[in-house]
Image (cartoon, rainbow, N blue to C red):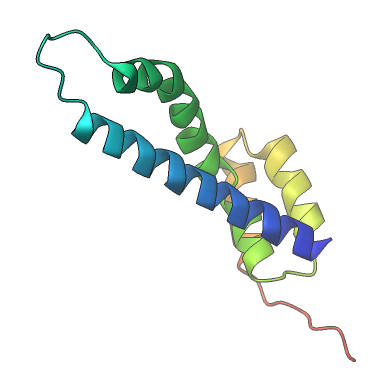
Amino acid sequence: MKNFFREIALSLVAVIAAVTFGLLAMVYFNANPTGQPGIAGTIIETTGPLLLVAIIIAPYFLPTLIAAFRSHHQTVAIFATNLLLGWTVLGWIAALIWSLTAVQRQPN
């Protein structure tokens, strides 16, 4: 289950980076002399709000991402706390502190 959250977090970061790079490239190469928005302008108008939502959601789930990257033994509980109580500032801070606590390693 811990690897699942790690893979989801890495995928989310990769998708946000790819979309951001793509949007910046389209803005840079959208030199249209007629003044009309080209295909790049249309794509930016439609994907801009989605990128904004992704940029807002990523910091909200920061405690979960930290716990997943650290292979925290309580990643699922941290995710549940983050999801259900993260909208309160205290719940988000509690999840963040919990994700930064010591990780208990399983004996092999």
